[in-house]
Length: 131
Length: 131
Length: 131
Image 1 (cartoon, each protein chain N blue to C red):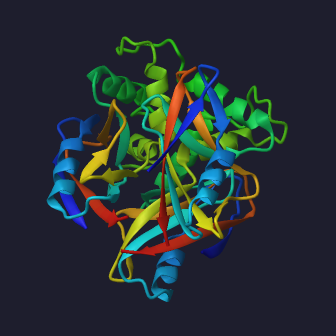
Image 2 (cartoon, rainbow over the protein chains, first blue to last red):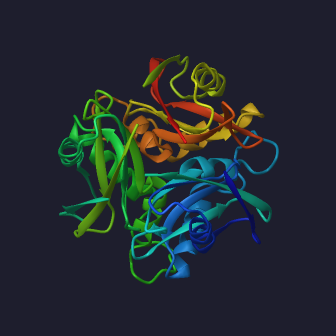
Image 3 (cartoon, rainbow over the protein chains, first blue to last red):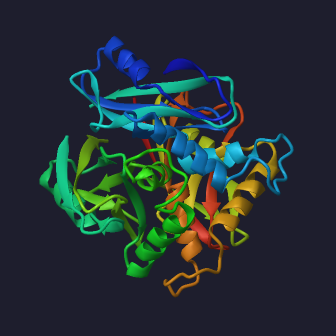
């Protein structure tokens, strides 16, 4: 298992980690397989979405804030229930396919760490399996 | 990697792709393994739900429209921010298990392409791994 | 494929199945790999979140009820459309990494069956793949 460290700068943000994942894949000898990407956190997920127009990222963050506000009738006393709920909805893990030592993504796709309770230093766990 | 082409007919709909996936699995020599199903799009996901009563599909689509309306305070100018947000919530990838050259699903489960910005021709990427 | 039976006690609840999954992994001879965890149901998902403070579980359940109420303009006549919608949002499958015959989780993470239409006896399907 490979571990990435990602520094986040805001309470909520999507951070494009695609270049870091590409570097990792190229550093291995695996040319074809599946890359498993996993957030070991409960207030920070992983998602795939458009990496061309940054307004897509801010619209995702804003709509999640509308649906799951920071302040509500929460019982968890740490003040980050919204972040836990968002993480279960977005998910904390994804897989992508590897071909010719490259991550195969759709034209507009990037892979994002979804920070919901930052700023913090987050881990991302990577597992690459041969085909 | 195998690629399916799926034509969608509406802006938002769930399309049962289970039969196409079954055909693909039977066309291979893999009898036991895991099938990875991936949407390379950012406004179109993959989900598993009931394929018996079609009203389940329409209730999912309608509730997502209620929560994430087409018109809102979005900043992305292409008019499909709702579709991007829904895709990150539903997810763009799933895995299912293969046994005896068949996809093993629960009694009521089907595998759906979740179109949120159609009609378009969509791709679904398939990767089948041996056990 | 290994099958777990999980009895749920309420219409909606998160049940920590981590100990059962740990037992399963230890009962196999696989020391390193990936465990695929799959709910074959359409009104019951799988999610990873905090297993320390039980109020996180209740906040997740309550917020999902707020967003997707039991009674609404649903067309599905079985009275559980909310459960179907929640299952597609939370997802019905996850993977976790196995190292040294143990499930590798983040400090606060547990793996939960997300019951949305109980009480019932639910199945969880497990597939463990060697690295």
